[in-house]
Length: 354
Image (cartoon, rainbow, N blue to C red; front, side, top):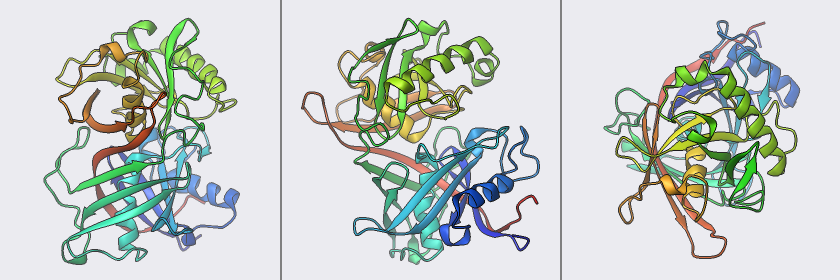
């Protein structure tokens, strides 16, 4: 690998990651993971000798390959790399990084561009579900410029519409993997849900915080981190995920009443460090949980106007999520929709640490 590896560094939503074609990486998983750790600069809390930005949301990888089935255009494998620890996890997908996958596929020639807009059907390899990304390609060329702003990202960019189907239970096997809308763990009431991302939802007040603290304050709260780790590891067992001590799933989201015009206020942890905003599929799962009658935190929600998406308040703004549930008991998810943006930062060759 002294000649380096073809790579695009891209911001997808409120995350940043390295995008690769599968053909440009080693076939052997162990060799591939070792290479990616060296590319990212892991293990090192600063990731000073690699592309990583020293936090989980900037230590991510997308691996894209041609479609392996008739119902999709491309396959997308997401890998979450550790920062201070040499870990590579494929136990979850990432909806933020997904926001740049379709554009990457067009630029690498895997998908032809439309004259004005391009729609790409993407198989999320981690969860074996389908997402549909639509983005502007005026004149048959990907255009990252636009007037759409999303919270947590400065400036504006072109809109990327993400529609999710078949995400219900995609990691745990069912929407409510414990079989209950409400469980009690460590004396805390929780709702465990999986609509594309396993999430443990609890009231912030039940863990002794307001739910409005800035991320930096939460990051310094070691007692809270220990309680969240205990909560999520016990929940992981109940959700059928086994020992999740060293895994980034399930995520934990603490909810509070909204105070900035949204429907609910959230603080999310991956796995125990506070997220600067909230993940796309994490947000989808949280909204799904809060729409269920008697779910933990559902009494805190300020319902949006009919037909409007649910606006989730997070430390750097809001995320609008639309979840369409049917009337069955328990409800089934028809589809979920989120609007994101993405921007190519560089396209070239990355040289891994020796």
